[in-house]
Amino acid sequence: MRTLLKAICSLRSSCYESLGAVCVSLLLLSIACMTGCSDGASQITMPGFDPQAAAARAIEAYDQDKNGSISKAEMAASPALQGASKEIDQDGDGALSLAEIESRVEQYVASNTGLQSLSCRATVRGRPLAGAKVKFVPVEFLNEAIGPAEATLRANGSGAVMASGGKLPGLSPGLYRVEVYAPEGSGREIASEYNADSKLWYELNPLEPPALAEFSVEFQ
Ligand SMILES: [Ca+2]
Ligand SMILES: [Ca+2]
Image 1 (tube, protein in one colour):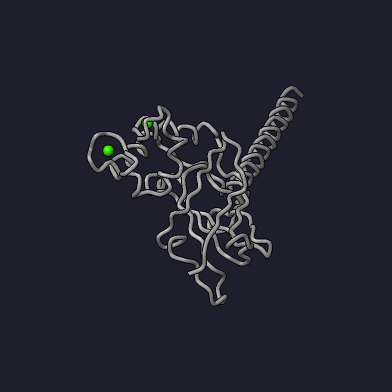
Image 2 (tube, protein in one colour; image 1 turned 120 degrees about the horizontal axis):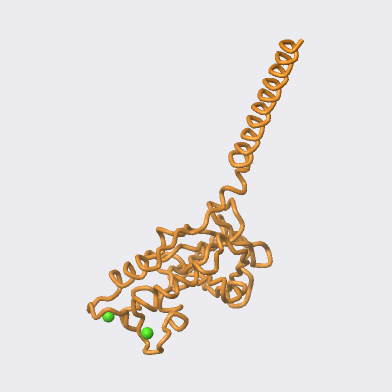
């Protein structure tokens, strides 16, 4: 009798063990599914900013006289940096030091933002540029951390900025050169200073409330 009870106990315990193993397998399967099946969520990745390296790349690219900072004249080579310089130049001396650029990139990191939703609008002499394409191209010293984004404008001249080749709504924090192109087949061309030789720029710093990104352009 004792042997029989022991055998039953051992059988029951091995059943529980098997059941436990099945449960663990199911749990692992569901965890694998949560990580592997949720493609939509896993596509949003945080920008890989390296503030120190980004600032060093900016200085390397634009500090022509090698005095350690980017003067107003040197900024002419980067309309985006020139445009955002008032925000970046903390000591107000008109030049951008390595520390000032690094500190600005640190703000993008501190915002802990992958993508921020943003609408943009383009007009020609106040009239909406329906069907136009607006491209946001990261400045070179940030393009290792963030990718391009774009918007196709609706009839009212505005549209949602989409990242990741148009798959995800929003824009990553950072500094961008902006290019505006006329709708395909419209027979009109936007002047090159708004695309190929663009002076347009946009900075997204989520720590400062983002507004509608508006661009005024001219036909060729
Ligand atoms: Ca310099
Ligand atoms: Ca400064």
